[in-house]
Image 1 (tube, rainbow, N blue to C red):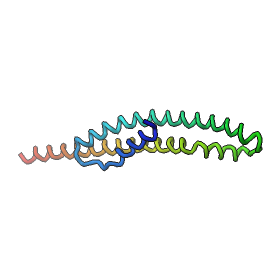
Image 2 (image 1 turned 180 degrees about the vertical axis):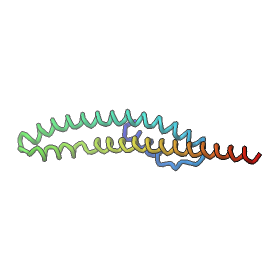
Image 3 (image 1 turned 135 degrees about the vertical axis):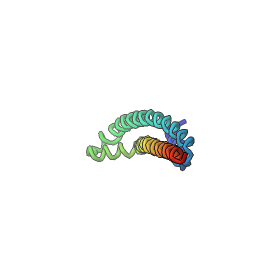
Image 4 (image 1 turned 135 degrees about the horizontal axis):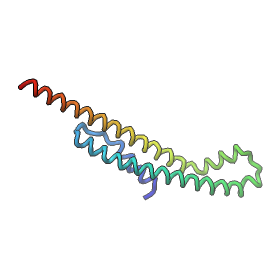
Length: 130
């Protein structure tokens, strides 16, 4: 499976609206922690691939264009960046997926805390009504 395919699967999971069932919230939080770890590894691999492409494309551009065409450094960099746009897109996407996992984990933690407090207050209310 490619990084792009895997990112799409995780993105689909992140776009699912969470229910308000505390058990499901905890399960989702557990899944999110796994996705957070996975997207961290994916991000490192995507950056490695981007750097490798930048190196390869730089050498090709130098060989094919710069020697003969005398292109400025700014034009050279723009050309190389354009040639690696797909890898850069994947790096950016995985970074955003990783950040979304963090935000959703925080939301799960907030909801679990809310439900714990509601349970505590319900139990206190029961004690007063005895």
